[in-house]
Structures are given as C-alpha cells and as structure tokens.
Image (cartoon, rainbow, N blue to C red):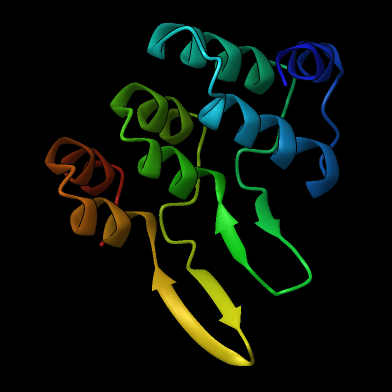
Length: 130
C-alpha cells in the first residue's frame, strides 16, 4: 500500500531483483498514484539511486518480464522514455511458463504493437527495437 511504497522508495536500491523490481513495479502500477507526473518523478528518483533498469520480474512459475515491458503495459509514454534514456534493454524477451508450457510473449515492442500504443512503438523503434 501507499505507506509501504513510501518506505521502499527511500531505501537505496540494490542491484538484485528482490528490491528493484517490487519498487519499480509498484511505482509503475501504484493504484494510489497521483498521476503520470508523480509516477515519472518516483521512477526518476529511483533511477538516480542506481536502481537496475534492466532487472526483471521472475517467480516460481518462471515468469520473466522486464521493467520496460511493464512501463509499456502502463501506456505511459513518459515512463517508457525515461526507462529508455536510462538504457533499458529494448531486446529483452519476456516469457511465461504456465503448467509446463513455455509461452514467449516477446519484447516490449511486441507488447506496444499488440496494445495499439503507436507513439510508444515509434519511441521504442527510435531506441533500436526491431
């Protein structure tokens, strides 16, 4: 919730998935977020503390998804641009393994195209996504 989020943000992120991803994901998907500008400012702050922009979510079901893909899913062009400016990997392939069946969801570019986010598609291509 919001109180936990505030506490997490002020901690110095380590370069491992245990802190970076929950905090970055929480900022991107915070339901109590007070707008795109606030989300951007929180992400910018974490990145200044050296949060790993190329960390990814993984769990016991072998789900892997990059922070960039989560930013794309949010539909927030400013967030995606901030991640790209901080050298997010546009070529990271997200995967899901559900009940033993590998499913390749593809890259952030595929997610943007499938979601109809044309401005984000163009932005990703400007940063080398193919």
